[in-house]
Length: 173
Image (cartoon, rainbow, N blue to C red; front, side, top):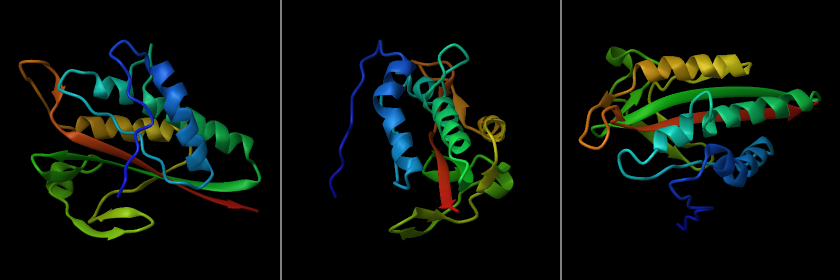
């Protein structure tokens, strides 16, 4: 397989610039029915979580994506959309569903690889969302279950890799 990176950003890049350069186009493609992935990579403390989640003053990729997705839904009234989200982490080589309590959502396994849908994960919660607030609520709930810890480089390091997945189904009437 061949993988292509759209861009590599420097340490002074604001979320607005990064999202406008890469995210907007990917969201547009996703709304047209194509798969899209936004991926951050870097060492501990380099700003990956900030790039993805951001804050009130500088929203990250997920809040900006949510805004663009629901703006698209709002302006395409002739199309019926169904949007589902899931939120998981990989921590200590285990897959954990961040939308379930640890007792039921921990150590999930990959059941199969689907060529269209990707990895199918056993018992992973997929929540149907109808508005921006629904997704914000899902993210808030997921963050409560996320693994954090202190390192020498970052006192509040997210100790896991997370995947926030949005499945967008559409049907034009």
